[in-house]
Image (tube, rainbow, N blue to C red; front, top):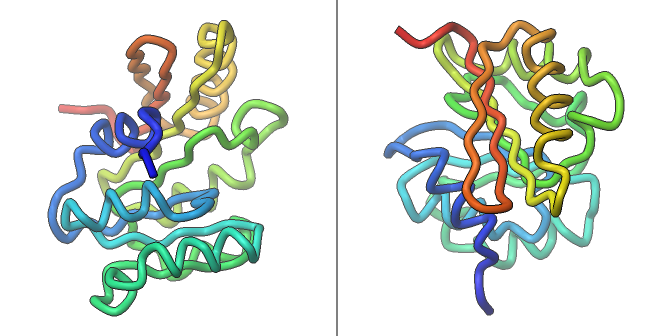
Length: 165
């Protein structure tokens, strides 16, 4: 089964380093989580769908057995775990632009390590400018230093805890 280009691009953009702890919000069937683990990262995948979590666990059995992956069923406010994440990411998750994500951004901020970052990815046909503005504004309002990256119709809005040196 082919891996969607948006997921490969997202994990490439994350620039996963061996040993980094990464939280994926809305992990779905665990495709991006597998890519993160294949690059040496340790991933916690979070999703509201029990079916998606089961599929992610099946797909990532070797990473689960190696202690590189954990999958949790539930919403962000109940499944973020003990924190200490170097990076948090989400692909095509509407939370960040359909309403105020202030509460969730606070949880993410608290879960990130000192210079951690949040990466919000979208594949928005014809809506990249709108999403970049809404998501960037939400992240900036949540205390993040925001940068935007685009490649074709792919969009990443990155929020860092502190401005880069």
